[in-house]
Each structure stands twice: as C-alpha cells, then as structure tokens.
Figure 1: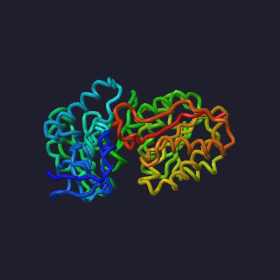
Figure 2: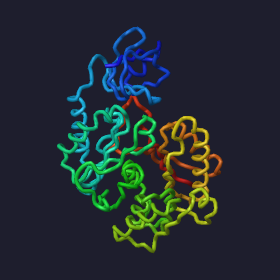
Figure 3: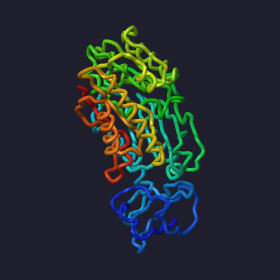
Figure 4: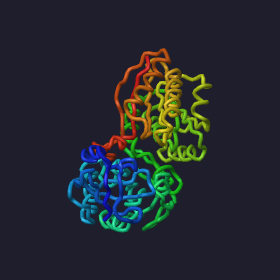
Amino acid sequence: MLTIHLKKGRDKPIRMGHPWIFSGAIRRVEGEGTPGEACEVLSSTGDVIGSGYYNPASAIRVRMLCLGKNRFTMKMLLHRVDRAIEHRRALGIGADTTAYRLINSEGDFLPGLIVDKYDAGLCVQVLTAGMEKLRGPLIERLAEALSPQFLYERSDTDARAREGLALRRGIIGGVLPETVVFRENGLAFGIDIVKGQKTGFFLDQRINRMLSARFAAGAAVCDCFAYSGGFSVYALAHGARVVHAVDSSSGALETAKQNVALNNLPSEKINFLTDDVFSFLRTTEAAYDLIILDPPKFAKHPGEVPRAARGYKDINLLAFKKAASGGIVFTFSCSNAIDSRLFRQIVFAAAADSGRLIQVMQVLGAGPDHPVNIAHPEGDYLKGLALRVE
C-alpha cells in the first residue's frame, strides 16, 4: 500500500469527510504503484487520516474510501453496493417508475462508480482508476444481487479520459434490446443507451418533471434544450395547450417524437424545433406560460465559470422576457463548478435586468435516488429554481 503524506494544514477537509485530495495538497508519495493503487493518507505530523486509492495521472490524486485507521476491504466494497441497492428499495419509488439511479458515486461512498437501472437492465459507468481495478467484483455483485436482463457499460466520458483510462462501451452481460423502454411516473420512455447522453436519460430530473407538470394544464410550454422530450411528454400528458420542444440536435428530437407517440399523446399539440435555444428565444414572438431551461453543462471546470455565468444569465434573461404574465420558469444548472449560491446570484442578476417582478416558488435539485455526501458539495451538481414571473 502506498503512503501519501500531506502538506501542513491540508488535512482538515479530509478529516471532515471530503473524498478528494488534489495534487497540490500532497507533500510526498512513499512507494510506487499503478493508477488506482490502494493508499494510506497521513497528515504532515504522521497521523493516519484514512485510506483510499491513488492515481498520479489525475488532478484528483486520491479518492478517499475510509476515515481513520480502517482500511478499505473487498467486504466493505460489496457492503456499500448492497447498501445502495437497499436504499433505493427503501425509497418506495413504486411500480409506475422503473428507472432510477442505483449507485451515485461519491454520494454512495463509491467514488467513480455510477449505476442506473432501466426497467430490467443496468447501465454502468466506471470512471476512475480505483474503480477500474475493482470492476470485476463490482459487476459480479450487481449481477448476483439483481439478475439484470442486460448489463451495459458506458465508461466513455471525459472523466475517464482525465483519469488516463481508455474509453470503453459495450455489453457486459445479457441481451440489450434495440430500444430500452421504461416507465417514469406512469409515462413510457424509450432511450438509446448506446448513443444517448450520460447513460441514456436524465434520471436526476424525475421529481422536477412531475412538479413542472402541475403548471402545464392549458399552458403554452417552451421546453428548451428538450433532448429526448422528458419535460415535453409530461406537459402534454398533463393537458398543455401547445408545446415547443427546442433542441440543436435533430437526433434527440427524433427520440422525443417517438416518446410522444409511445404515450399516445396528441402530436398536433407539439412542435419539434431544431434550433439554437439562444437564437430561438431571441427571435420568437411567442409568450409562454411555462418555460423549462435545462441546458447542458456550461462549465466543465472552474476555469470556464466566467463564460458559463454569462451563458446562464443570458438564457435566463431571455426566458424572463418571453414569459407571459404569471408565467412559470423552471431553470437549472448541472455544472459542478457553479455552486447553488452563484447560480442564484446569476438568476437574480438576470431577473433584475429583465425589469420583471419574479418570485422563487421552490428550490430544486436531484431526486433522493441521487444522494450526496454531506462533506462533498461538488456532488450536489444539479441546481434549480421554480420561478413565477409577474
């Protein structure tokens, strides 16, 4: 086991439970090992703080697994997998919802591992060198505990590349249907796990889609960055008068069309618009009763925050100007580098520039199947506000 010696004064966040140690906090590394090697972490005075795994190829050199003198074992790994599964069962998600996050990386104390359940199958992402070393036992445990119809891997993200790992995508076990269909709050969705974003669908927005649907009856709705039509399908199913689903990807909107048809919803009430959302909102003359802003990640790292902040302000300002009197705006950021406080400041600045009176009705986030380690605010990546525009 490697030994990681920290610089003076750099141990406090780790003692408090933060799972990341960056290169700048490390004084020296004792021993040699391959990426993902188990390590023990010591303070500058030689106290054992905990253990984790080390990757010299990553800016995040150590991801912590245990605090104190306990060492992470295979038994502990499998126990955490089992606990994550038990937690989802305890949520009582219900028979009308067959897709949710099963394991949420640091939020389930398994940094680098994401598992999403889609009906009878699982989609797995192994994103760090430490989890790559443990991949075999993890896959075996998931197969043993859940007997999935298919087990598909989507370890093909930028996060894996930053770990110095080759990208990987493909079937691990079982048979993958041509289209995976699942239910969410009684609505049916078909996704392409092989080519879709993330693991195929934005499961973190489930409760927010349902909340937005409360304002859809009789409304003119603009679903911005619509992707595969999650918010659009909910709006139509709950009585929207008209829906404009806007996305720059024609392929994503084709999936959205299929999801509308899958639920036998009135296709004449929805327009699928392949366009840049910023351009669309600047040029449309329509006024909307309900606007959804669910953009992709504008800031992938801290250096992109200033540019991202301008983007978030612009898109919110445009939405406020296009909202009808009494209209509702659901606005989100999924950028880790934009924290909740900054996001609210950005939206406040857009509101001030709009000249409209705006109420915060509810602060939004991911559902309870996306738990967050309380010491790891970076894991609370999805920020949202439900707003009313006077």
